[in-house]
Image 1: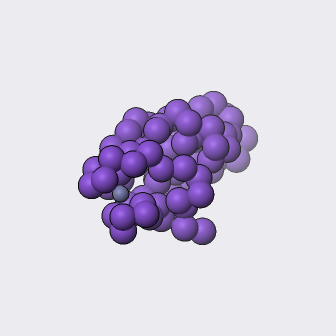
Image 2: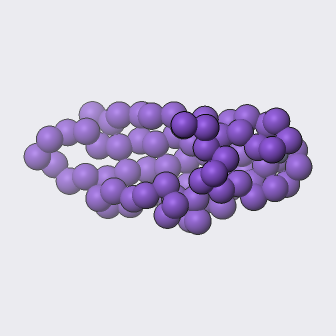
Image 3: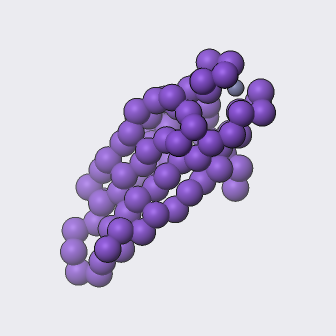
Length: 78
Ligand SMILES: [Zn+2]
C-alpha cells in the first residue's frame, strides 16, 4: 500500500500548488518515500528510508511557473 500526503505550497506571488509525499505504509517491509511537485516546476525525489523536507526541497528545487522564484521549506503552509 502507498499512502499519499499533500502539503500546500504557496509562493509570495500568490501561486499555489502541492508537494505530494508518497510513502510505503506497509509494516515489515522496506521503507521508502517519494516526493513530487504539483503546480510548480522542478524535479522529484525518491529515497530508501525517510527524508526530511529540507532534503526534498534541495533535491527538487521547486520553482514558481509564474514569477520563477525558487521556493523553500518556509513557503510550505503547515
Ligand atoms: Zn511565484
